[in-house]
Amino acid sequence: MEIYALIGASGTGKSHNALNVAKEYEIDTIIDDGLLIRNGKKIAGHSAKTEPTMIGAVKCAIFNNPRDAYIVREKIKQIKTQKILILGTSEKMIVKIVEALDLPPIKEKIFITDIATPEEIEEALNHRKEGEHVIPLPAVEVRKDYWLSSIVGFFSKKDTKTDNDRSTIVRPKFSQLGTLIIADSVIEEIVRHCIRKYSELDGNVKVSVFNRGYGVNIYCEMKIHYGVHIQPVVEACQKELVNVLDDITGINVLKIDMRISGIVA
Image (cartoon, rainbow, N blue to C red; front, side):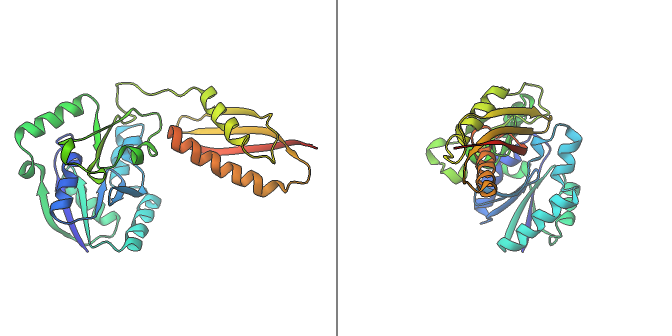
C-alpha cells in the first residue's frame, strides 16, 4: 500500500484540491478530517466537522479515539486499497494519522502551495473566514453525517465535473454563522407517518422527542392489532425510523423507545 500526503494550513484548499490530486495519482481512497472516503463515498469514520468544539475536531481528525481508529483500520484492510491520500495541516498531523491507523510510511508529500496558485489559496482562505469547510464528497453523502448543519454543494468548472468530482461545503458545528433548527413537531410527524405505514400497528401514535444536545431520543406509544408477533414488527419499525430520519434530516438518533400500550381487534 502506498501513502500520499496532501499538506497545507487550515483553510488553504486541501479538501477542494484532493479530488484532482487523487485523480492525477490514481488514488481511490482519501482520509480527510476523520472520514475514510473511497470512490466519492464515505465508507467509515465520522467527520471532525460535526464536533461541537475545535479541540474535539482535532482529536477526531487524527483518530485519537481508539474505537474510531479501529473501525477505520479494519475497513482499510477490508477494501484492500493500493493507494491512500491523507490530508493534513502539517507533516506531524499526517504522521499521527499514519500511526493511529497502522499505515505504511508516507511515500510522497504534496504541498498545497505546489498545486494551487496564491490566488486560489487566498480565495479558499476567504471561504474559511465565512465559516465554510469543504469535504470531497457529494452533498447527498455529507448530509447524513451532519446534524443541524447548513449544507450547500458546489462545483468548480461545472461543465467538466462528474458526480464523483463533487466537493461539498458545510458549516461545522463550531462555526459561528448559525445553525439549522428542526422543530420537534417535524420529527414527530415524520415518525407518525412511518409508523402508520405498518398495518399491524394502530395509527393513533403518541410521539415525544427529547433533545440531548448531540442527538435525540424518541419515545413512541401505540397499540398493536390482535394476533401480531410484536417483536419483529417493532424492530423493523425502529430500523426504518432511524434510516428515514437520517435520510431526511441528518439528525443523530440515539435511541427509539417504542411502548405497546394495548391491543386492538
